[in-house]
Length: 195
Image (cartoon, rainbow, N blue to C red; front, side, top):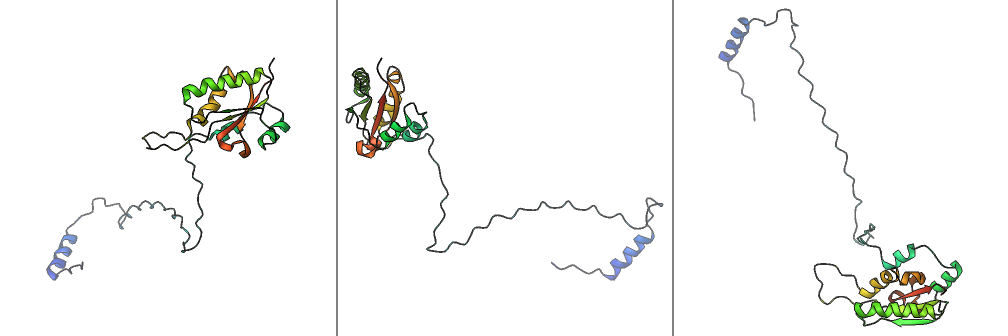
């Protein structure tokens, strides 16, 4: 957009107006006051620049954690050690042979819980120290529903049952079994001595 130049008549008119005007404040400075300074604009922080990605180069993955609940193995590992440390290490490496075994494969919750209770209490009464409870790893659901369901219901329930009375009084330590005894699908249950 270009500015229009004033005509001669407009310039003459302007000079007449200036001659006939009076100052509002005669004692004021002859120069007009300086216009107010504009506020400084906030300085934008430079956005972090991403390194150039070239085809074939490795991307550095960021650790993403979506787990809301710790895994069974992690929660059992956080339990305080109740038994002899040397015996615990040998048990975790599969060096101690279990004296009894309960296989809960294919059982439903309503039959598995009483079977587990009977097995643990009778094993303690007979003087056994280490028993193996096999739950299996569980299978994936055929049709995924709106609510997430953990894989292997018995695998998740057995540690909970073992932590509740009357079984909790009979148990010294629970830990996932060594791969030679079933790995993630089984638990070592180290029993207290019967009195």
